[in-house]
Length: 92
Image 1 (cartoon, rainbow, N blue to C red):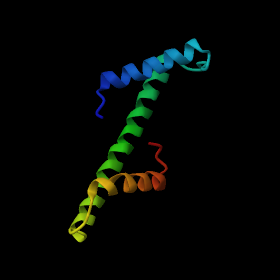
Image 2 (cartoon, one colour; image 1 turned 60 degrees about the horizontal axis):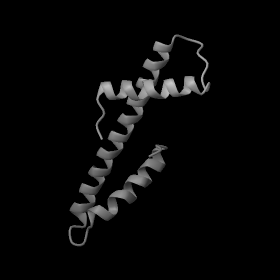
Image 3 (spheres, rainbow, N blue to C red; image 1 turned 180 degrees about the vertical axis):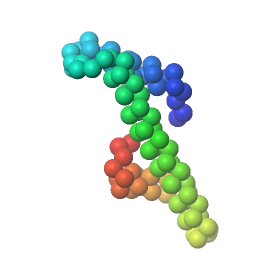
């Protein structure tokens, strides 16, 4: 799922507001800086997932070339994705 910059900003703002209402967070810096940092972190995490998807598809393409007979891409996709995510310490 592709998120726009506006959607990322909205998501981070909503999380920040919920944390403020529940007194989960105490600001030591300006709220805008915290919000921008949250957006950066979300973008970085999202990019890691996109890179993972690209690598999984490359691996599946290679496997499909070598095992063209009975290769079932839809069955292998979740297995490879889960294994790569575990190796890279990405939480899905």
